Amino acid sequence: MASETTSTSLIPELKAESLETLKPLTPSQLVWRRFRKHRMALVGAVGTILMIVFIVGGSIIVPERAANQGELTERMQPPAATHWFGTDSNGRNVFNRIIYGGQISLVIGVLAVALEVTIGTLLGGIAAYYGGWVDAIVMRFTEAMLSIPSLFLLIVLSKFLGHNIPTLNIFGRTFSGSVGIVIVVIGFTSWMYLARIVRSNMLSLREMEYISAAKSLGASNARIFFRHLVPNTLGIIVVSATLGLAGAILTEAYVSFLGLGVQAPTATWGNMIGDAQSFMSQGAYWLWVFPSLFIVAIILSVNLMGDGLRDAFDPHSSRHL
Amino acid sequence: MWTYIARRLVQALFILLIITAVVFLLTHFSADPMSQYANKQGMTAADRAAIAHSLGLDQPLPIQYIKWLGLALQGNLGDSFFSRQPVVTLILQRLPMTLILMSTAEFFIIIISLILGIVSAVKQYSALDNIVTSFSFIGFSMPIFFIALGLMNIFAVNFKAWGLPYLPTGADIWNHNDLGALAWHMVLPVTCLVIITVAGYSRFLRSSILEVLGLDYIRTARAKGLSQRAMLYKHALRNAALPFITIIGLDIPFLLGGALVTESIFAWPGMGRLFWEYALRGDYPVVLGVLLLTSSAVVFFTIIVDVLYTLIDPRIRLT
Image 1 (cartoon, each protein chain N blue to C red):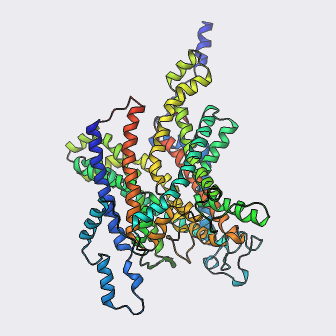
Image 2: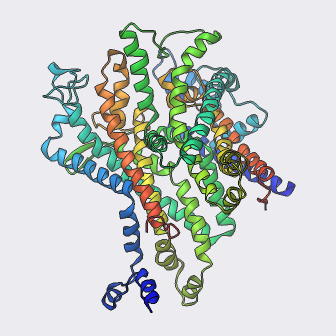
Image 3: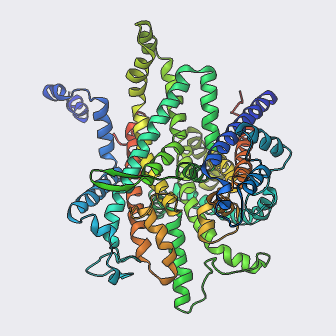
């Protein structure tokens, strides 16, 4: 009798009320619970939020004029109390430019990823859903685009789109039309991996019973695709989109660094570094160190977040449960 | 096996056809090679038409593409619009420099990422592992020009200012046949490439070793009393190395294209810079030629890697 009580006390007690409150978790709650346990992912999420607060809040305090117009008497000043990150060759405040450049970089990243996800999901989905020769053609096209070194493809495409650049007026602010071109270029050159992942995932989903059930109920192709296949692939898409955001910001930096991206006077972190290159030998480190640090910080944060999401969405990972 | 290879080869040709057609279209509409003659003094419309005719620009686009393709199949990639040199000659001038740079970098990349990957997997969660992992995470999130400009600032600009022996930025003129000068100019670009690539590779290797170390046959090896060293090198590494070898194999053809950003920062006369300089001017025979070379390398290397994989790993069957 005594031994029996000690053995049961080792098992966690399950009281009646705790059983009632123990409702099954929805998939999104499960994801959030796994994500929460991932320490580095939380660091990444906090870092991303801080960065957004910085570039949005900063633009409320600092007017855009202060970023794009310089004091010609204050050119090439090293960091000081009046201008924390120094000034550039036009006397513009680097700190202010980082705020506005960050907005452009982030907007480009988000919109490029939206384009990437749309193209990748549609092409991957179409290839998986229709199969046969549609699949063969779409996947050969995907492979062809993957076989071109990505920077080469970016350059060819931005040369193609970039020969007449309009100016856009959105929300009372003037943007160089090159912002739109950069978004299209990044979106069109980054969808391939996503298309492959979506295809392979949907290939297995297609064979499930509930899809045949939906078909026999007379659901249209579009309905099956958007109501059944896409929601069940959402985890993969969200993870790819998050990691893709980091990739898109990095790509924007590369394209603008090479001078093919966003044109002056609109600042982005990439073109600030590109412009800084000619002042290297004068020792003007502040022109490229600060934008670079911001790029590294945001990409690192987004990547950490994406890694956490990948583990959280993976139902096989029990590591963090 | 042979039918598999034959099928893949047919697919490869189809892929190359898509690549060349897409790039041909894109480059054709992105720049007008005649624009350089637009404002030339003493040139009449008839002269311009004659030049356009001699470049074959007055023919319909599909004809131009088929003509280009036919010549390309015979190993003639046409002439550059601007320098009027054959594209093949231009590529052959630049290819050795890219191969020297990239193979040196790749050599250090493989050795360093092997060491870092193995050490951080075996000593998981040790201080060293944490340092390597955070370093690789940061390196992974870093644009290569940040490292390039940073190293250049320290070792070329500051060292010069401090009167120390300094590394060249590439802005100077040097003899490419002088081995000493070549090695000296290669230090900075190779270091940048190594840092960036090792970050990704070592993380990849670490996770594939950790995955293997968790498998049953490793526990069996431990249980039968094998030493840690024998278990690691004879059993674990063999399987963990497979995916690592694959990504290296798949990355090698991309080396032919050179490192565009690194080459342009350090003024390295390689393929990346060749592409960059000529693409900016809209010289599309050169652009097409470089792309055809690198993409063919990528496409055929993928097939070779897939076939070799079955030889290394008998569990995999080709279908």
